[in-house]
Image 1 (spheres, one colour):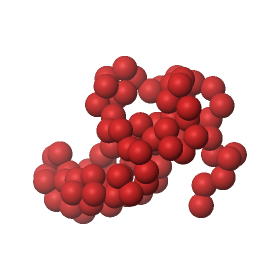
Image 2: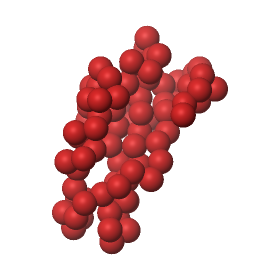
Image 3: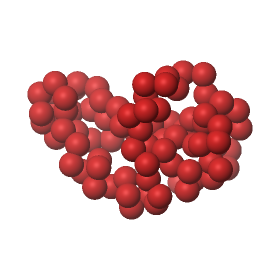
Length: 88
């Protein structure tokens, strides 16, 4: 369960312009589910699972980075623009 303590109050320095440009806009958590369920490993095309998430901010938006791993251990990342979490 997320709490307000999880929300960054200042811009996150490691969010790159490229990552933000590729981020997927999500209006609700339900918007994120089909993207994650349909995501495949870019290396081997096997199914992935969520290992953790990190929240980041680049004003005025809030971003959710979802860290993934496939069955063979290849890492992956999907970034959502998740203003519904309190970013605006």
